[in-house]
Image (cartoon, rainbow, N blue to C red):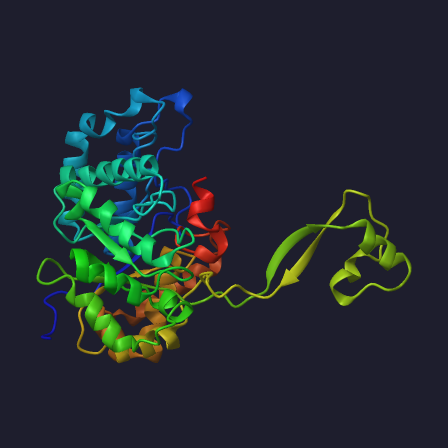
Length: 390
């Protein structure tokens, strides 16, 4: 593949950690009449910030149009059409700044649900988000990323049912829908099986591939197959994150048995915190090993450089899913220039940028806001989607 006309892009999802004053959507409750127009004012400021820090890809909040598809709140159902002028202006601004946009609907959007009503509601959600991208004037690079969904006791039937749900989607959804391999249910092989039967484009997720690859597919070969599903429609995109490695802090209630053991001097290391006198309703913080499906705060630069060298000659943008969002990219860029300048160059990060990148890195020492919520696709932390949808 020839060298790209423009550098590969790095992007992040939704929340801006480096500027906690910036909002990604209108979060007011329904009683306050939230609106897509307000959300667009907020994300327009985010575009300005992205331009300042030279980040050219961004995932919009799936709640950008609040209550727009809530079945019991018809007063909000027309807000996408009502915001046509604002959506067009926002899309024009994103194009002028060279910022690629996308959505990643929540785990409640399930095209393979055995409940026809849930599938119907999911298609409505997808239609609303696809309509917003259409009204923004976005090209085929602006996609809706989704997962296969729940297993529901039968993997083969669930895979086939996703295709049935896809076939029910209107054309404007099919044009934008892309399917991602996940970390605990449907592997890259499952996604390719579906793709061969319906033609949906695919998004390769690096961390998910490591977490779930029972078929032991080769990473380079699989990546090439995923990228090929995009044809000449647009530059493909992938997802990258490093796994969380630190201990997890979890609050647990002290049981009567633990208190009794502590008083008798039989407490194990895991209950040592209960030796001190405690109230009956007390909770203690315990430290647990990491869950490898969880995303780290920052991207391991050596891991990312190794991956990009494995992918030498392939062209794709990278959605970085570190939990520190934009800050993880601001930290990664000087790291790449320092440790892997060959990889840095593919993203337009050049030696003459060193001083500016170092200043950005130093600014991180001022501290940023923390992110405690699990990302939408951290399956090991959010539970089975069929349970979430129940």
